[in-house]
Image (cartoon, rainbow, N blue to C red; front, side, top):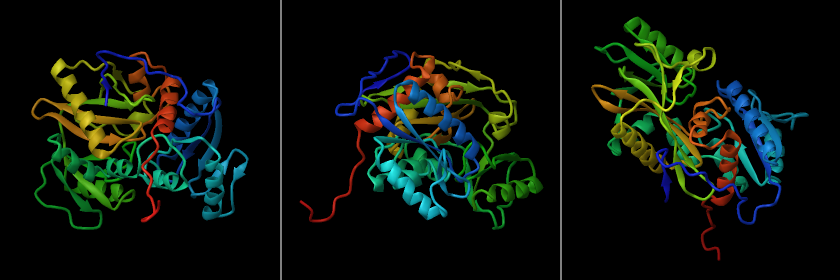
Length: 353
């Protein structure tokens, strides 16, 4: 597998995949039933516009908060099952699908499973990669096996008694949620109980982590249309001391990024190597963003992995690759062509010829 770092950027080929029709027909999915519904709609709008600018026929589909699938004319059926059946028929007439749905019931492997069963190529990680990366506890276990440091902590059920004698501050997270929804910092027992209750509204499994003092630095891996990999330049998020990069910071404020992040060559290499190792171990496909802390006391510490990161032109991952000469529209097209190039592993009936 050829890998290209940001130290020696290479513009991937933009030719159509062999055997692909001259004008691709791609379904772009947005929305979803998670708390990231609105963010997903923004990603889907941007992706659709980028593909149309590359002469791709776009079929827009939205998953409502109620679970019903819709096209621009309205719901595809009265109930969830009826609309889903109609949507699968629409998807089956497309060359590929860009499932721009963040969070649970989206990037957690559920849509990947549906598209695998439907036999339609799609952008992004498959069932295993999506499920493992969405589960923050499972991601920590994989990282530890790779020798990548993670914040100390443990897993609790939201309704169970909390462990005593905690050292504060404590970072509280729903195990499966995105965009920092439900993430908060507790500074005492009362705050911890409140934070766990809030996180439990999104996922009954809640992660309690030691607060890591350090710089927040992200890096992304892109699997291009020719099968090679590009590692983007690291991006640092400027966060106030003692706080976390929460939902309000991401979408209600104007976050400040340093791109490329001011890191040493050794730190840059460590970020790159850790991201590639996680990309492979988790089974990621397409593109994934890896969020780390650079801590004076602990070095490189993994925070989380995103297998369907925000993909508007102003999102972190597109910004990373734009700085090394891969414009937003080409990035989106590369993801679609990559999905067409590498068909998913199919299951064959036992005894079939």
